[in-house]
Length: 297
Image (cartoon, rainbow, N blue to C red; front, side, top):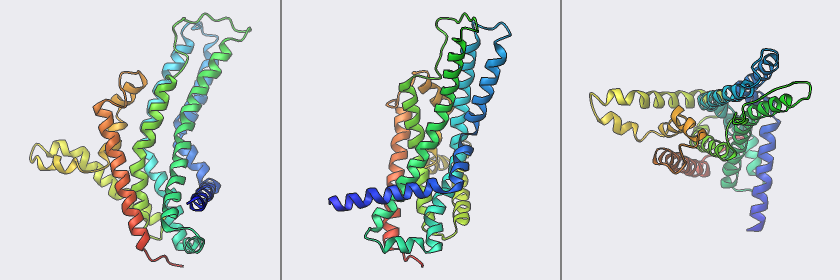
């Protein structure tokens, strides 16, 4: 048991290094965080410009509110473009390695197929966690820099005492981080399952994204279609994309940021349960198929 655990840990480290070593991984991290990176830079520029405009008592609070808006926009954009990047990362990790014969070589080592599929999935989750964290940290760093600049003896400022100096509280940040992570779990599991049916990363990504977009379009149209036949709404209730969408709604994000919503509120907890349930289902199905799949090479 101990030996299997050690092998699993070594395999996980190996898969994480492979993902992070790819040149496109850095591009993906930049692409997933384009709003906080550009927004943070612009925020600092605006802060520096404002120091001569006589808005000393409002400047930091305005910058904070702007960063909160950018943070929300970042989460929404992240939800839209993350599937694209995740499909390519997973495609390289599974479909690509099967096409190149690397998967066959890996399975010749003393590891089980279950360990392989779990380690590859966890490695992608680790990549996702890094991507989610970078955006929030970058925007919060902008506020920290602005606050310290305002305390410079060369700048005489008179801030409002109750002006916010953080985008959100540490607890709210952890909640949003957890929600963003959980919302993307079924997406990762979905693409892991899709990657087992193709040896072309691009083809896998394209077909997987096409099906996902089709499903999400149906979910968005279901309320209208239900006016003609309630059956459409019943079908939509069984489509997994509606759960991540619920977690990334503007009302949900602002509710968490302002402390008005909790992850245990039915509107949020039901979506979280749905995401976790679909993730388990997709991963279980992936492990079952991978166990019986003939690996080329």
